[in-house]
Image (cartoon, rainbow, N blue to C red; front, side, top):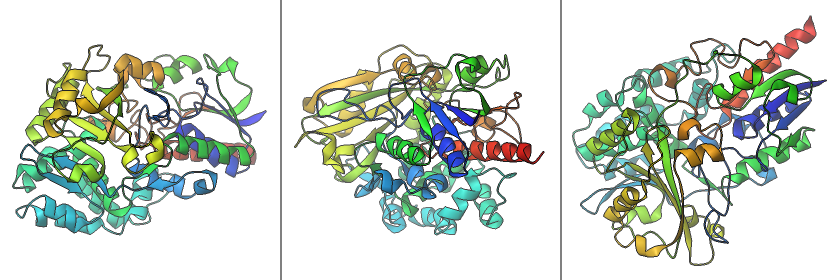
Length: 471
């Protein structure tokens, strides 16, 4: 009998398998798709030679992950590439704010009236990333904080909604850039702890950067799978699990799936009937004949570009998407992988992606609205498009079953569900079945390619197995 079986070979499932295999446990992973990766894949979606990331591309929480940092993933092919600027945020007047590795450069780009405010917000947390994130992303009952004072200081700044924090800025230039950071979790700006989301992404840029993996996001999953193989673990691809009886006997089963799928497969009935799925993404991957012709200079050097020139416009777009209607002027998150990794496209060509937010399950077409927004800050963009691959909520869910209704966060990251996932519990990775555990982004600490949900779930399984062995 195996010690553990993992269902789903996304970053969290693979991380959980690695953590258990490192502790001498026998582990096998079962993945429905033909390749590992989940939300960290790389494919030729448009034209030959253009390598796109169907979901995530830029990984501030990946390079800053305590779980990944404890693994020798560089020996298995993972190499982080840093763009000159982590992020740029253009405005209608032809200028742009930047999120730089330098706090001073970032503060200066926000204007003289808000530069000091930004520095004061970030300065208490500079130099604390490794300890802060380890404390923040771990479970209190499995890892006592190493710096409880620092964690409390961050909580005090981060727990209020961003709609409160933005009052500290005098100009909308700073408000808009920070609102864009909050919008990465696809939640209204008025939600609890949304200030913390913005501060965490900003701090990540200053402490670790917003890098991309050489060769694409698939490199993260491939490195984890290779490491697992060296530890004696096995991955089975092309194996769809419909019920527990499909799997070999094991002492524990970990699900890198949505709570809905876990309940169906494990026969847990209505265990997660109150779990909410949030707004969705509408994503376009582009093959371009050249770089995006941004009007401002800063976006031409940035790995990520946020498009939303005012905090009001961003809040309206989020409000419409979460309220059930597609925005006419969407807030966009865009990525430019080939600026830092020329291997992603043929010589002189580029890959580029953009996504906006739409209601869960929406089956419309946001292409024109997205491209009008890009053209607003990069006139002539459409002239450089060689091919595009669009994916609305139905296509995103078909590509990755965890994206229920196109929700790329595997559950609404809003309200208490941002902090208490998937249920209000001191043991969020356990289920009512004593041998079944949840290890996906639907469990703490939530979305992002960082593996910490898998790491925390593996610790829960390891403790359960150890206690059983002691009896």
